[in-house]
Length: 87
Image (cartoon, rainbow, N blue to C red; front, side, top):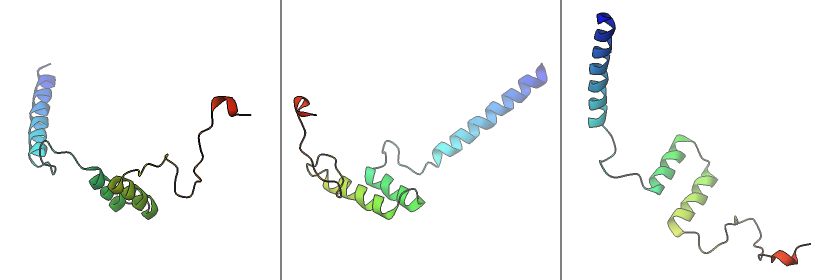
């Protein structure tokens, strides 16, 4: 019983030291989160998204949606139909 308590005690001490050290070397400034453009650039640098995806998302983030209805550039814009007009 004493040996199990000693292992738990030293495990907690080591965990606490690691937690404090990692917290003091955090790369992000305290209280500041990443901007959406920073996240996009990081994902592109990691290879998680393609060049086309990066350019498309960057344009939306920088210039906004531009009043579009969510359609992509290569999709035709269609007028919304009324519920009774469908066949």
